[in-house]
Image 1: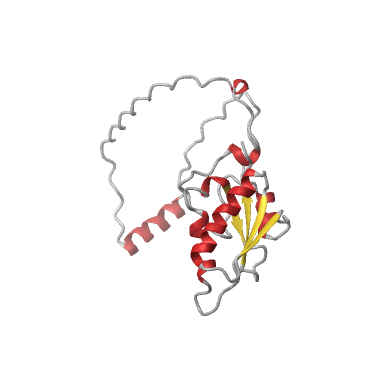
Image 2: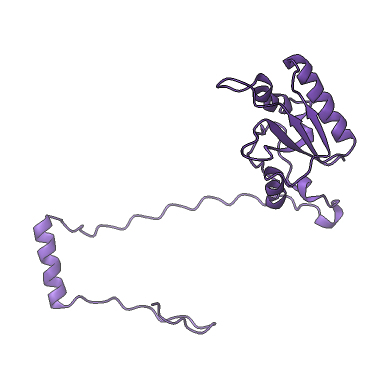
Length: 195
């Protein structure tokens, strides 16, 4: 339990240093002699280091009222060089929207199915699909790659995140997620708003 604070405006009285009783002093001496601890001898106090010079104040920023107000998902843009990963929340995306995307509650406005396509053909289709969807102002789209076969999964499934992080598409995309943990053969994509 802590001591009550003095009323505002009053400075608390200086705390007095507690003096050890004879029993406490004897106990301490016994501990010191049993452990071989040697008390430090008080030496000259070291001079405190000189404080670092304060940096010059920066120029005053322009008033916030002069700047146009931006939408929430554009307020903190993700740097274009930050690579997006499927199922990882990107910086700058509000939690409610991220949860809706990763739990499959955002319904895709358009879907691209890549089943049966070769890698080159699928890459072109993904690029055209994402740029067209962004140009139309769509917000949530889906790309179905399928799970693939073998231990590593399909080529399209493995390459899709690389294609979406390409310089032509990365600035258009806000987040990537599988709509359900068990459905790793599809990716829901949240697109940025058009400016």
